[in-house]
Image (cartoon, rainbow, N blue to C red; front, side, top):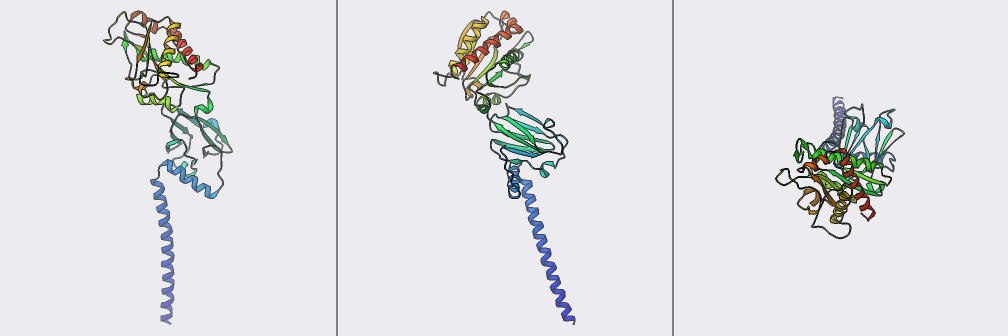
Length: 342
C-alpha cells in the first residue's frame, strides 16, 4: 500500500514539475519577446507591430501610416507640423497616456522615413526628403501619407533669407543685415502667395532664426527644387562706409555654365533686379567659396542686393518701399527663369 502511494506521489510530482517547466518556458519566451521589443527602435517597432497586425487581420489601407485615435477625437484636435528645413514631421495626439502607442500602435510602411520617435502623445518622423503631409481621419483612425513636392506643384523653388538669429551679418548704424534680408524675403513671400501659378515655395526661414549652413544648402536637393535663391546685403571688405554701391549676384563657377545653370540664373536675377530698382549693375561674382552655393544640388544664385556701407544705399535698404521693389525684381527673375525652363 505504501509503495503504491509512493508511486502515485512520484507520478503527480513529475506531472507538476513538467507543468511548471512548460509555464516557465512560456514565461521565458514572453520575457524574451518583451526584452527584444524593448531593444527595438520605434522605426523597427513600426515594422514589428505591422507584421503582427497583418497576421491577425486585414490592415490594407492606401495611405502610408495608420493610427487608432482615442474615442470621439476629431481631425481638428490632431496637430501636425511639418518642418521642411529639417524634414521633420511632428504629430501631436492630445491627452493620451505614455503607453498609448504600445496599446494602439502606429501601423504602416517605413518608406521615406529615416527615423521615428514616439513619446507621450507625440510622434516625430524624420523623412529622407521634403514631403507634403496629407492626412485624414476616418472611422476613428488617423491616416497619413507623404507626397513629393512634384506630386503637388508644377514647379518648386527655395528662398533663403541670409543670416538670422545669433548671426546678424553686417551691422551698420545699429541696422543688422539679417533684418533687411528677411524683410525683403517676406515681401517676396507675399508676391508669391498672390501668384496664380502652381508653385511650391520652401523658405529656409521666415522669422529671426538661424538654420545651419547644412540645413540651408540641402533644402534645394531635398525638395528637388527647380531653383534656389539666397538674399543678402553687401558691405565693403573693411566694413568702412564708402561710395561703392550696387547689386551683384554670385553663382557656382565650377558647374555647367550653359542652359539652366547657376550662372544663367544669376544673370537673370541681376538683370531683373537692377532694371526694376535702378541699382547699379556690378555684374556676376564667383561663389563656389560660399557653402550654400558650393553644396547646393540645384541651380542657385545669391543676390547681394546693395551695400550697407554706402549711406544712400543703406537708407534705401531699410525702406519698406525699396524692399518691396527689390522683392518685385526677384519675383520677376523667378517667373522669367521658370518661363525659360528652370
